[in-house]
Image 1 (tube, rainbow, N blue to C red):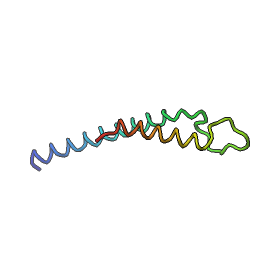
Image 2: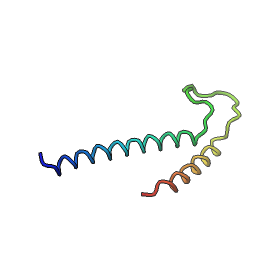
Image 3: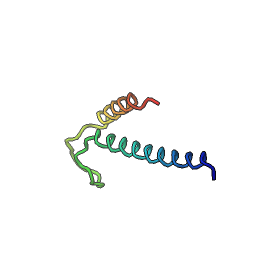
Image 4: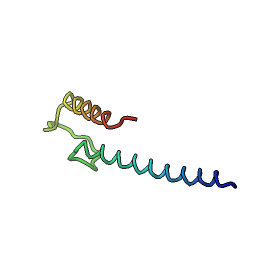
Length: 74
């Protein structure tokens, strides 16, 4: 194996780790942006809830998407 190949392997491993850490950090930030108070519950809510209506949830999702797009320029 020549030196160029070894350097390429090392650079590839470092880049893979950095990208994975960045993606994980991005998902963590995105999950915190939602601010859901029912984290960890999988059961759907029934009856009269005090949460936002579906139209409000859609507006919030659009706003979050717009904010995320602003920071995700490639």
